Length: 335
Ligand code: FA5
Image: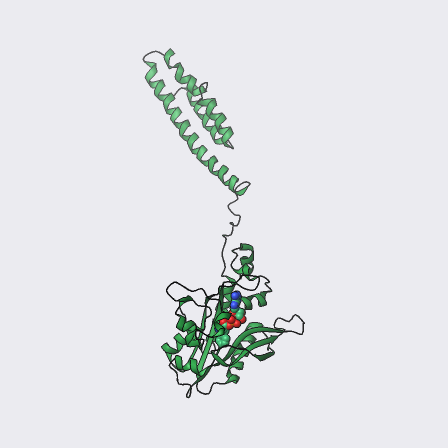
């Protein structure tokens, strides 16, 4: 290699290495390999050489060109990576910077409340059961002591299906399914989705969640019902609840109650809040469930899960639960 060519090659490689960005690299490329570049000019000058000199010099220039091109490509790859990282990071790439945390989801507040309730009841020996959302009329109404002519059917506007079945209007039909399957004694809870053909407003949804509870054993009385309800509320509220039972009418319990709690979330107001309907299982319902009411008694309750979550978190519109607004849902993220 002639001294001129060797020097030109070294200069070109040094210029490439010194290029700090893609623009500078382009400049170096055109300086040496462009139409009017120094290496290109040397290649062009081959024609002026004698036939003996030409092959060796041509090979030397070509080798130098390959070296420069290879170095150029490597540098371009490196600088492109830096440019991409700069673009992504909005500044020079710092590999020691902590990464961008991934967007982690969280359980829906109703799911969280359900898990909590299931934990509390499992601690009291209840097991969790499930039932179908499309229910037979018999389970949803008749076996719960609500025959077709009964006015109580009107209070639960029902989505009827063409085949005569319905979307369950409450989780109570699972009381019957549990009794028929498990027999007495039993302790079950049934969290699940219910449906009513109701006008939707801030406190009513057409699709909502309840949790049914049923305990059947010997000599079960209202005292057991109160004990279990108070234990539940103590766990949820984190304090000893002041409760009262008012008469409530449901054909499948006798007596039936509305259970109210006094100022459950410490607002300082002297007011009672209706929390859950409950009562002693009607003997007729036990009979439908294949259980002898002379030998066994029981209590049942039906907790509205959205209503409970609304009270607990101060949510004023039930539609927020299904609105899909991530800002609402992300408030329930737990560390
Ligand atoms: C019942 O559904 C009875 N099955 C409860 C029951 C079970 C009583 C066992 C006695 C023994 P009710 O229709 O009141 O009762 O509904 C119970 C709870 O479900 C209500 O307190 C409320 O919290 C919730 N709920 C009822 N309708 C809706 C609705 N449209 N939107 C949201 N929550 C509702």
